[in-house]
Length: 248
Ligand code: NAI
Image (cartoon, rainbow, N blue to C red; front, top):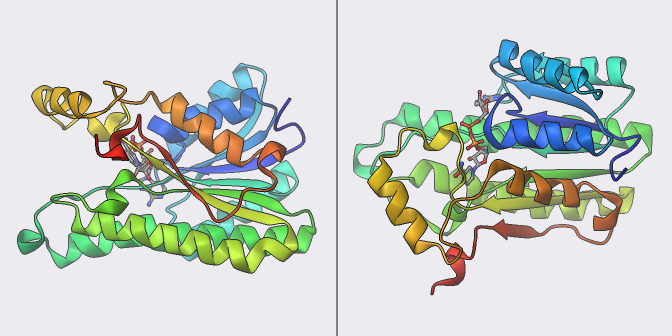
């Protein structure tokens, strides 16, 4: 299978796109370390993977806390034998127009989405360098990198993820570590639960494919970027948005 003999970390793996990614990676042969700030839910996803015949552990990790990231990595290496693929998926929103946005909402979103992605990349890259195996990192941006009303914090954090991705791709290429990012469009996950149905319908109408993505459709892009087939792809931002950014 595509990810046989690989150990993968998926952050924010307890639900939504992260859960779909953890399950898809396990189906494709990877041993998966499911990280989430909600440790019980991460363990449930790992248990479901193990029951289905895969191999997984669940770890309680807040990606914005370096000590928790380091502990999650140490546990992954000791229980699964190393790390070869990382999907930085954990992300949050705290939407408000910029004039009403609190400093707390700004800091929270930047800490989870941008600092968290950096901390996990840094820890994983150091481990991959120590292993001498190379590796694959797939980060999560968003169509909001191009700006989105009410999302100054989120949009800035995701644009930061793109700059981080390109910089790490340059710094890590010599070691055979590729670093890319996926920009999902509207995806049907619990993150969208609070969005009223009429707004969801308007969003779907504005998308050339006329529907939201299923989480698994985003997971498949992460799986490609973490596979051997993506060996010559690095520093790229791949939009998976049903054509939403085509401007038609
Ligand atoms: P979700 O809200 O359904 O799931 C996010 C998961 O991340 C949850 O399990 C949550 O507990 C976990 N999490 C939150 N803070 C964390 C932290 N500090 N440390 C570790 N885990 C944490 O989100 P969804 O929709 O699955 O989104 C996943 C990623 O895709 C996010 O980065 C999001 O910004 C991005 N994205 C989602 C889109 C969508 O339409 N759903 C569109 C574009 C990007």
